[in-house]
Amino acid sequence: MDISTTYFIFPLITLSIGLMWLVYHWPRGGVHETFSHHAASSCYATHYYAILFLITLPFLVYWYGVYFMPSHLVPIWTVWLFVIGCGFQILAAIVPEKGVTVRPHRILTGLSIASIYALSLYLTYINASSRLFWLMLMSGILLYVAIRGQQTPHKLWVQVGFYASFFALLVV
Image (cartoon, rainbow, N blue to C red):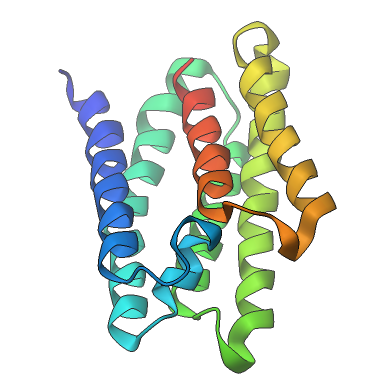
């Protein structure tokens, strides 16, 4: 395994295990709530959630800017989209989704999703043949949530599907 793979695999495995631990240790709502809801269950959970993203997302940004961007010949502005998406995700993790901070949290999360989705659209545009399925899956998930809103069942799995589709789009 070369170093570029390590910068991609390490944070994904750490993030996956960390998010599973979050759901296991603070099981608020089970699979019917998002990771943010689980993290909002206590002050410790919120800190854990924020630290998890502060540790893992910089590695992914580094991997994208140093290895992915040059090898796929994508423009520098795509790095900024990725940085913006990760930055808003970290801010959303710091602001818990409870009480008076529900609206700011959802705005930050929405901005993160918008930048990640915009990046996904561009990456699919430059190589549609291998990425179209993953973009269609992401689009379907966003449409499903937009239609169902707060009535969306199994929110945790919907969230996992969206982000798994994004990371799959990066490796195909």
